[in-house]
Length: 77
Image: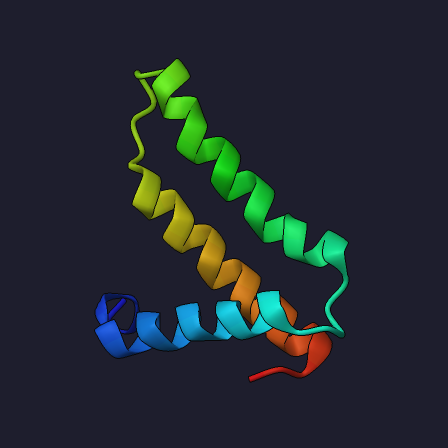
């Protein structure tokens, strides 16, 4: 829990995501695995305003999962 509240952890996570998204060895399908759900969720609350979870919370949850998965798969990090 303490790790998830750390600014250092999130700075590392989002810089890792940037490196993954700009890496040439990462397939486009794997990059879209992060980008599409985040973009869809950022648009959906405008269409469905009764969604109880904030946009940034969903982005952070997906970012954490994506960074861990891709850094292990492509040995980036």
